[in-house]
Image (cartoon, rainbow over all chains, first blue to last red; front, side, top):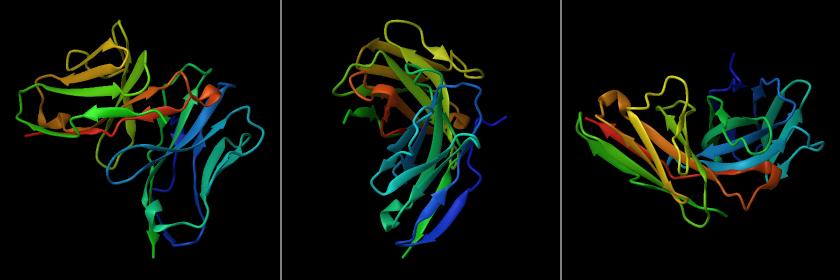
Length: 116
Length: 119
């Protein structure tokens, strides 16, 4: 079974609108971490936001917020007021186990295109 | 923030030759680095965990003799693709965690990636 599932291979969103990128995960660990990374066409992986499994509040980083629904095992990324520079691939990733295990499992990604 | 640098960013080589890719942590020491491979329009797949001063740990299905990993210092890990073939053409990207940052978040920092094309 896939550990990280991103069901949206591509999305087109009008500039200035909010967008939600879906991510569901599968783990039997009680302690885990969820990440979102942005990958522009240049290839580098840019960290966006992190949610720990024990965090009670949804993570926020500027225009990025993570809608964490633990019982549903979902960790959707919400980008508010989208900008043209947001066009990129977005990957959801999970780190299982306790802190110190830095191996990440990535989803298949969502290609986001912002339309002017 | 912490910086991880890869070199070269692009390399084209002939089939049968070997190619070395370097991954450096520029402002921190990393006892562990990770090597990922990404095929076009696909996700990142972990290839191996590079451990300073000891052998790398390879993921299932990754050929150890094909992808040689050396982590000789706390700031440098190298990936050598031996006897490269066209099917080895891919985007290779490394990552490392700055032990001085992140706390429970344990944020990983990624290199810029290296695009290998084998003719």
